[in-house]
Length: 540
Ligand code: ADP
Ligand code: ADP
Ligand code: MG
Image (tube, rainbow, N blue to C red; front, side, top):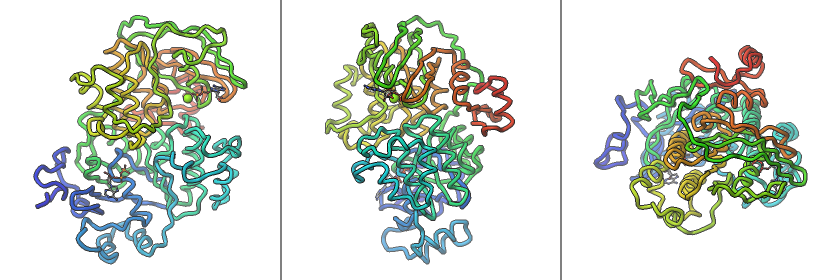
């Protein structure tokens, strides 16, 4: 006998994992269940013409399933799998709801969807040839010139798809999705590997498309989601077991409920702690010893020069590193790691460095456990289990072969690997990529605790401003011209660092009533006022 709550468990209802006070109405009937003991989805996001509708929630909660239903790839079965459920029955269930019209078109098979998938690394395997050819072949809306200009793709049109960096591939994938003529656009994470400036451009292009077409956007960079979407559906539940997609909420309210961990209308607690932002530049009150001196140095490649002004790194601190793509951040990391030699020929070798690269790929068939055991002698300790394996959600993955992991799983393994090695300095390049919001929060805690426990210095390069805000004690700021020259300054205290970095970009954040930073509309009253006052981030 299956449980009446979730319909998937026999004895212990997984709903107990959540503090559900009142069962939401939409839980009467599931939208779809894959099989007797398989994943079950409740609720669907609502595509609305003229709007960007956001979906906010963890990986594995049914977002792709929902999209397959909305695009006609999967016919919903209302949780019934013993027989084929006819469309009349499905439509009858949706009678009187906002989704009826839309699903009627799905039933008639007249919906054409354009989809930007979450993981883009398959693209060069499926499409061979040049960027320009792929883009031209998909130019149905005749917007290609505009998209190429805005996303600065002109210099890579002649490149072979197989040679692109992650950030280039992301912009190509987005361009393809936005170029197609469709009734419904679904974009599954657009920000990984893009810098904040490119994220803002992507947001602008998505809004332009949404003026005339329904767009659904799944995004874990909340500052960007908040800026681009008008409404959001919160997705919650138990990954891989069941997912519930709420009715739409205004974006500010929806994001705040999500961060608070309490979904008010549904009366559900989805997290037992709220996410709180610092409203002042947090000056650390901890006395820290100096770990190392970053020397002043330069590194010249043909066509690119990096200049580092130098500074000190303290034991136990997390230094955030911000700056555009192509401005020398990875080169800086390689100089510190002694992988690259500065122009003066003096290789940096005073500290040992453990480095997580920005693009993590895996071809090995070794298991996760095998790899981690090679990196640390403490694998079996309860410390390792409680501080690394459990919070990063690696316990269920230990026996998986590394080459079979999804992008988000691989990211968490790479973070664990980096932190497992013995070193004085840890450098993590874009740890937020492909992690959902929950995982970003947990990873932030894991990294901060590792810095304290090891008495090491940790540098985190990232473009998600909420992650940078939460993880950093001080900031290193990269200025310059991407692909031509870079200047690394700092470390600064947070307030000065954020003002310096956002000042370069011309982006200001205001605070809402809960203290959450929100990106100001360029040219708005607050944007102008804050720029005049030189207050880009910590402002209320
Ligand atoms: P998300 O997009 O939120 O990450 P998905 O919709 O891809 O989540 O998947 C939700 C759950 O449904 C996952 O546990 C996944 O393994 C499961 N699932 C997806 N497709 C199928 C299928 N065809 N048969 C059985 N289970 C599936
Ligand atoms: P970021 O990490 O900030 O995106 P990188 O440090 O990777 O930037 O690259 C900065 C610039 O240096 C880019 O223009 C890149 O092409 C160039 N560059 C990086 N490594 C090399 C190298 N080994 N040889 C030549 N040019 C390089
Ligand atoms: Mg880099």
